[in-house]
Length: 149
Image (cartoon, rainbow, N blue to C red; front, side, top):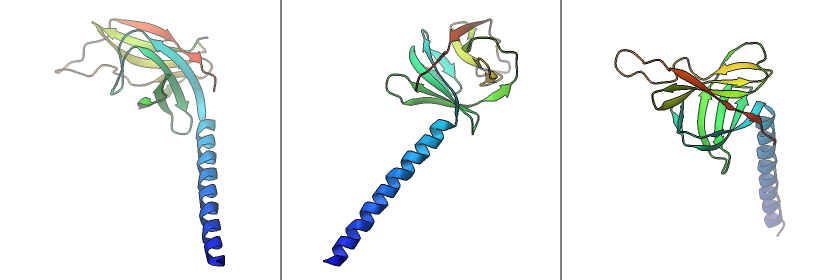
């Protein structure tokens, strides 16, 4: 009888330890976020390999890996994860997503975060077709608002 009680206690202890470790890991991962913002797209936009349809999104900058994580604001599912190349600039005053426009295509060229500098997703937002990549003709700015946790 004592053996059954000891086995049960060990399993409960392991389960509690696992749950506690998971919570601590999640809290540590959340603490590494340098920035968390929310933006709305009115058109389809390419960001790295991902294509984001119109809608609301949350963008997080992970400090430990310099990675930009984009998730759907409604269901929280990840839609893009891209490496950030950080370049310093004067504080522009507002956080915004810079979108390059080429014909009817749109692609993220940079994420500007107020107070942190400018974070570039890629030097060439559009994939090259043929020998030469056509340059974007204009840029649109989409406001990025600080998201509440």
